[in-house]
Image (cartoon, rainbow, N blue to C red; front, side, top):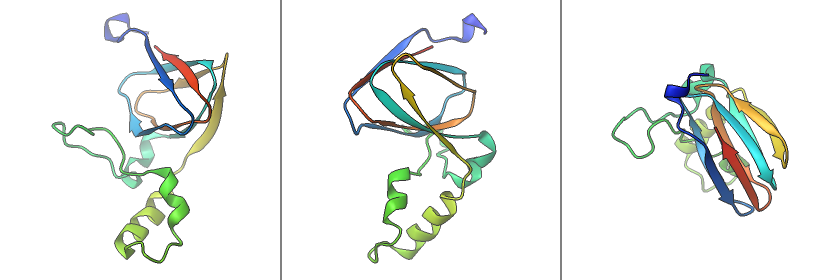
Length: 128
């Protein structure tokens, strides 16, 4: 690791159902789950063309994906605009792996890997 590029330890606390938008970080992440559980959906950088990444450095959502995995459940709704349905179907083909991180476990997320996070229980995690 390169200490001069590290941002210290960041801890996050969340209630069940809270999500973190799909995004990437430029540095490596070690995520330690202190209590509770969260689902992580991870995609490698090669999938970014399918994820609708916001590239505008001035945007508050820079480096975030427009893909909300929860919306894939609504593809069969008749009131969804065709353009949105087409994009969601395409985005849904992005390669991804899903894992549940539980209390006492640590997850390594490589630089530039996308991650969407769903809190499954009241939880606390710390990243470095």
